[in-house]
Image 1 (cartoon, rainbow, N blue to C red):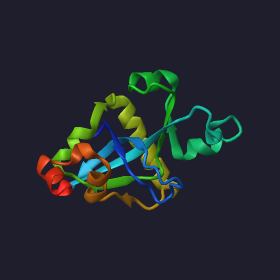
Image 2 (image 1 turned 60 degrees about the horizontal axis):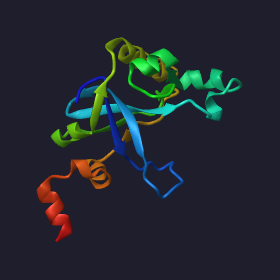
Image 3 (image 1 turned 30 degrees about the vertical axis):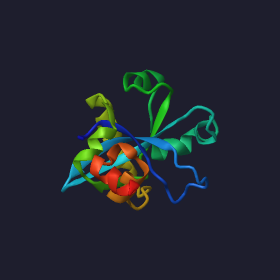
Image 4 (image 1 turned 90 degrees about the vertical axis):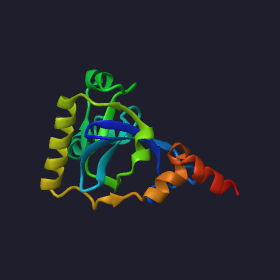
Length: 153
C-alpha cells in the first residue's frame, strides 16, 4: 500500500458508542519507517457539521471534496476527509487485501497540504495507533488460512 491508496477496514474507535463495528474508508497519506499513516473519510450528506451554519468551522479540520472531486476519486457521494485525526499502523503485507483503489495525485497532495495546515494550527489530536492484532481481529480478509485453522480449533 502506498500514498493515495484507499482502503476499507473495520476498526473500533474509543469514540464509538455502538457495539457494532462498521466498515470505514481510509486514505493512506504517508508511509515511512514501517508504518502507514491514514485518514478517515466520511459522507457530508445530512451531517450537521457540514450544514451551512457549521461548514466554516468544519473546513478548519476537514478537506471537503467537491462533488466532481468526490466522483473523480471513486466516492459515490460528496465526501470529506478528516484531517485532524491521523491514524497509523505497522505495515504488514496482508493489509494489501483491504486496498480498494488509488486517489488522483493532485487530490492526494491537496489532502496532505490540509493535514500540514491543521498541524500548524495545532488542531490535530494525538495520532491514534491501530494495532495489527485489532485489524486482523475485525477484518477476516487479513487472516491467513493457518490463522483461521488455529481460531477454529
